[in-house]
Amino acid sequence: MRNTLSGESRQPFSLQAAGTTFYVISHPKHMSEVFKNTHSFSFHEFVLDILKATGLSPDGIAKTYDLNPDIVDSTVDHFQHPIKNKHFEHLNRQLHITQLSPSSQNDNLASLDQAILSWLQDHLTIPNLQQYSLVQDGLEVDLYKFINEVFTRAGEHAYFGPAFAKINPDMAKEFQIYDALQWKDLYQLPPFLGPELTSIKEKLIAQLKRYFALPQEERHKQNPSWFTPNTELTFDKLGVGERDKAIFFLMLYFAANSNTPKLIFWFLAHLLSSPASYLSKIRSETSPAFTGHDLTDPSYLLNSTNCPTLESFYLEVLRFRSNSASARRVTADTVLPAPGSFVLRKGAKIMIPYRVFHFDESVFGADAKEFNPERWGSLPASARGSVRAFGGGKSICPGRYLAEREVKKAVVLLVRRFDFEVLGKGNDGGEWMPRGDDSRPGVGMMGIEKGGDFRVRISGRE
Image (cartoon, rainbow, N blue to C red; front, side, top):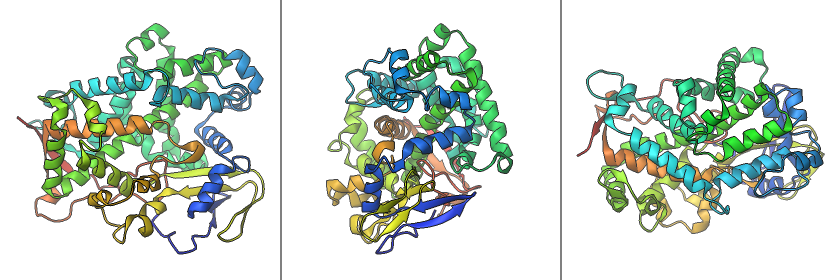
């Protein structure tokens, strides 16, 4: 959806799609009300809609989301930080937080973070990357496809360990097909409108079922994730079937790998298309974190005082290339508060396209529609809160801390170890920056328009 919602009033409007009424919210006060009023505006119902569209069976729903909270409390007793009197949705979120929050009283985030870094340090070498090359002499790749496949493999390793790659070394490549089509489930289009989605989805579900058929000790060996085995244990305690378990974990695979690789791609693409001074500054200010080509002090990168260019570039890519939207189901007729007076009817769905807030000139200045990392040097600290790349309210992404760490480490490792030469479109000095696909809100970072990938030659740096 293009940025057409930024009028003075920003009143909600409705539209019809696939027999469903959608209310589009674009005013900050209305957004806050949707977040606060969890009784009338249910995220739980929206999640169920997506799981049903993905293929979760009525039995799977009955054993998780429709389960009496008391049964969950008496059955699932292995949580380190249990939440009483809540059903599986809340327990599942608690598992995510225990894995991914830096404030959790454990080292789960740090251990997962370190596992990804170790994988990247080992994998990001010219010999290892040669498998992705489109030519035999040298290393040439289509950058969008290359970045998505490499860093999906990194996420796969982090959450499933090395056992998954042994079952299907092409899972990351096949996932790119699913990732490009998953929006049809998001909008709950009937299967006959997406036969190619059904086909690739069934293929991935079959691969996940093969993974769970392996002995647990084989799967859990060298798996850096605390979340994966504990979530599996939860499903086993609740008696969730193998296919439904695979569907849940397909959603996990999607959540872990849909957005971070795209964010890395856009960071690198903007860096290669910007004045060379940005690349020089990032290489210079991140140099103290390295010993040779090895990133030995990753915490150094997270301090914006140490790496101001890295930080401002990261924030600007988030602002400029995020196309995320949040959704809720209206469970009771509700009047939104001022400004205006708008009735949201029971049964309809709410869409909040966060991208409209990213181009608010009252926050980001008159050049808000331009890519300009320099703006962050003069913006107040509160401006970061206007960037909703990771959503907001109850549905805010618990993986946002890991994503920031992985993106910054990935980019600085890439530019520390390699030089990138843009081929083809960039040779004449003309515009080569790919166009983002902002034609529909998604769940995170936008992809590129069809046919918009570009080729680069990668060479090692001394």
